[in-house]
Length: 518
Image 1 (cartoon, rainbow, N blue to C red):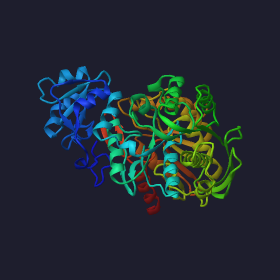
Image 2: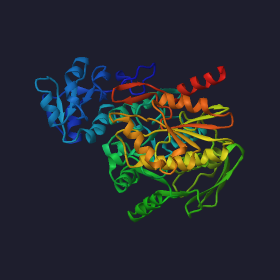
Image 3: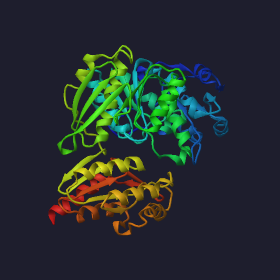
Image 4: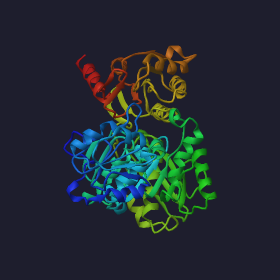
């Protein structure tokens, strides 16, 4: 989608791209070309983003097929269309070359890459996946690359950034044509490295095809997205596909949990030798990270490499999990830039750890006020919510107050688990709405409340979300901590009646101002 901002990272300069034959694209993706051969430059998945000359990628959607917008895309200047047989039927009478493939989603990346001139071939690409910690770790990888003079771009849940230019993001990993457009923009900005937050949906849907990653990192795995993957096994194997030799050159795997251990064992059985393991809980690994607690919830990270090299660095970001994220980022950059995973560049390791790590990531443990302490975080699944509350518990002087809901049309099984974690770890919870989508909100809240069985005195049901945030902050005492969990920096609420602007941080600041006036 073209963004209504001065800088659109998904809109590279088309004039700097070469024209490509549609026959070449059809051959590369195993498609059939209907109509005469044509030429394109660039690709789009949103008809409204057409500027002139692009390949319009018309995918089947949940409610409508993208080919229904083919006529509009052509009027705006699209020069060819990539679609499936169902889409072709909807394009009857349109005088444009049409490339027909069995699966548009999995062909889109390769087609878009060719249409943009294969920009990722000129980039060193880094990827991070896992259930929790992806966003912060990608920010840290980018930060570490900058420490050693490697300018990079970043695309993920929070924003898309190239050099010093940034723009809001609306999805963890964009659609394949958007990702290729982002890579083209990165190249045009003379940036050589690209950091990508890789979701399991993106892997399953082919959004990162045909990117090849120089180095990828695995954070952890816990229950999430089972509305899509159905089983944890499918969820795991989808994540694991990023670590195959077909997708990535080098791999760093945290083996603190059983899923990480299993991933390392799976790669070992497959005969892969370019991966290294990292542990932060004492498990034997190629890299070990000892974490010492400091005042203010900060930590000191002591890294020990398999070859005897060591380094220490303070992590001035609250919580042990941020030390773990920092360890992964450091080891990824060292592994990705050293001569080989088994030939570690000691000078680089020292350079990366020469100064304390201090990095603010929007919507990730973002501090809005001190008295009461108000924090916004994206934690929305059982694992991340438990870690968040355990982290804040140790530094909360008064009560730990939680504002939390669950998303509609998502994994229903995790809802009562979220409720139970809140009941056990927070002093009081304001059960409210997450992104409702098309589901009935009272039913979602009822599922969460089921987890409070035996703890009925520890919650109140409050909707809409704005009211819950306001009530929690106004009822908090100066020594309390109020944590707004589940949405982070997200600026839009999705409801059955449509979407509207809602940023937890904006609502919280208004409530804090009301306290000050009172």
